[in-house]
Length: 423
Image (tube, rainbow, N blue to C red):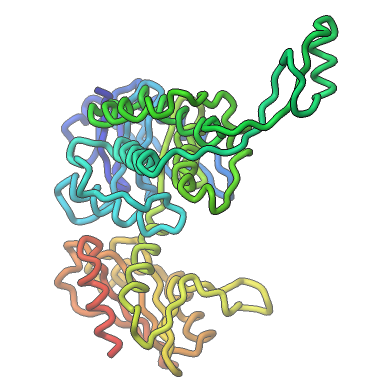
């Protein structure tokens, strides 16, 4: 069984043995800590992001080096097999409940590859998030096998004593200068050995080695015989490049997304580690935004309200500095703007509850450009703010910004309560 360290957003990790039982720190053995430090220092991103977006690495007097998780949630697996599971900071003392809430939130993300996944069918108590993702992949493969693994025409190149298809001249000259009786040819063949199936088989074999969960290992063992006549992908990039997205490959879309994650050690974020470490990390700002937006959209179906997520209708200056509120709701001549912020406010009116000045500037710009004084800031609820008085800010030119707290564990009730304020 691999070692699993469970932390929450913004928890601090140390390898100092004096703090093993200290409530302010999570302890990680020195070897694993050094591997995590190495991973952080070698983080690669595909967009404008850097290591500080994922973790902070500092040094504290009498403690030593400290690694602090930020608001990217998911799983990190280190070189030695140690897993660090980072959960969102929601008010649930139960780890399994927190994982369930997080997974429900993830399913709302547009790019998250999941259609048939249900947390009620997974033993979340005994699985890390990574094992849950493996189980999700298994469910998708099982669904494909049930529908039938698809055959198609695929290209092959090889040396043959029989001439068929077309001669690949350069390779033929290179390989058969001496063997005049052979032909290096390219031809099409019909069968199961298509790139998609090769990649799925390669993924299953890799996950069989990676998984430490008995249920997942057993299920992969049951699935692999269905791919017995299919070759295992040897060149992932080449096979991924041959995958075609059309109506005939619809059943493969989700599986190919997951195969890219598992075979290339990439996440759905801009994060990627090196070949000996892997991570699946998700920015909670985006997860929260998608969760609220898609549940609100579902709740408004059949009403007179029109809803737009990430509206792009206005700019601060002429075609420059686009204004993109998370959610815009319109009905007749009425507009409501909602912006989600994944941040824990505190019940301190003197310090504006922890609401940033930058966020208020942003809300004011929305109000002016969209010509509305109905502006809402949505934050996740926490224990400190449950009994807080309603929060509202009014500018001297009548711009009103109201604060609403979303209960992510009871999203439907929370959304219905929010909609009730607009009647």
